Length: 426
Image (cartoon, rainbow, N blue to C red):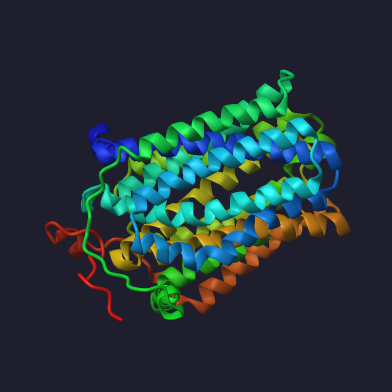
């Protein structure tokens, strides 16, 4: 595939600005997460504390997801996204103060919960904005670029944080640097001029907030992919325990932690580049099931490894195959959802992602506290393999899923995927 085909989304002005802001924000937030985990580990040396940090971030997202989705469908997604970036800046500066002042763990938890509140509005507004920034035929390419940018930030952010900490730079200084990157993102988002489509959501009611869940329940393929991600990553995630592996199991310090956190995203970034250079997927369902199964197997091997090179390789593989499922899920959710529901469906998707990532971190920390980190990681990987088999059996539609965005959708001139009615039904 020619370079022009690979970059067709990034050559659209609105998406190029969006991508630049996404890169700045992602880099800063990934650095921030690494510093927070390392500071908490140094302060407590307690696996459960690391798990509780994930729980503190997840609870606000669970509580506010439906409200955030309705807000994204009713108000300007661009302004909501910009507001969340500036709120992240304020939160980061508060973390810098906590690090400088040696605040208690409970103070860190409180700030993590505030950050989670911001994240609950950030995800739905960002994800539902993308279809309004590119032409319909470039939508799947834009999702792939989104994934690649995120993975690149997740590689460079932890490595940069680890190197700076390893050089002896104080944590609060590194956090201020993170805030500067996020601030740049907020100003870039304000420069976006998305294509507006008519949408009317009406007053916020229980029924309107649950509309996203109702749509997902009816779209069995979306339900299957989200469920697979929820339980697969919830059981198989090992991110919260990486400080323990870096410090006690593999031997090292913050620099090794940075590389352990970056390894999955290096694999994911390279996978995104490879997928961007390929035609649209023809057999998305089987590819999804295979990728999640491979993810589980790689986590099992990582859990028992005491060799740094093998551990890094397994994390690399886990990130590469996980990105296949990420791209399939995000493309499917946005392409098969009408515009007037995209915010609410994205909120539900974000809810599942937060539950799988952050509650998975809590589950890993709790099991590690009782049985040790190795058993926690290995049992989680085995659980992921079991989940793949269960989803393939319960949802036969996923085994048959072929092309994510049907050709007849792209053939409708001037439409976006799943173009909505002008007014949302009551």
